[in-house]
Length: 234
Image (cartoon, rainbow, N blue to C red; front, top):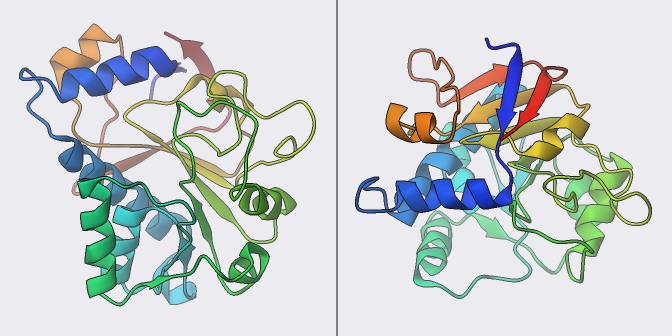
């Protein structure tokens, strides 16, 4: 494992996604979402095996995979994205009778769950947190239940990390899965486990962005990396 963890800022991360979805890269957005969701579901399985109980989660793709692993996911999705790809993902979960619940207060949902998957915001998020997501951030910040954050902890600035004060300033998820590559705010992460996920990055794209491809084992879609590793922003 390299001694330095290379990270991508928001522009580089967006450019890399663009390269993957270009004619040269050959991926579609739904393929990348599927692979990312699969990685998230494996990270959940790693930190909280299904024999330990049910799971409450937010990632739509991850929720489908988790259902087939034997979990009982609950999806909090208060502000749906009105695009065909998201409509299809919701329909898939509805066909499996996976529960969506935007009415129950989030603190009650969290209390009924064993693990929260934080997939509220992506790396393009800019503070502050607005309604209706503020109640979820407030609950996760209290540490009521363990949290696995997807790519970047929600409410954190992608480069600067948690807010200096106010909502989200004390939010520290227990686990983090960085998709494709870690983001600069990973230097502020002090949780229990950090994973890199997304087993689709080829040597040419990795070389262009000066990234090290993790050594995935067997069928794994994730690789655990040290939490306290030195971070290098690219």
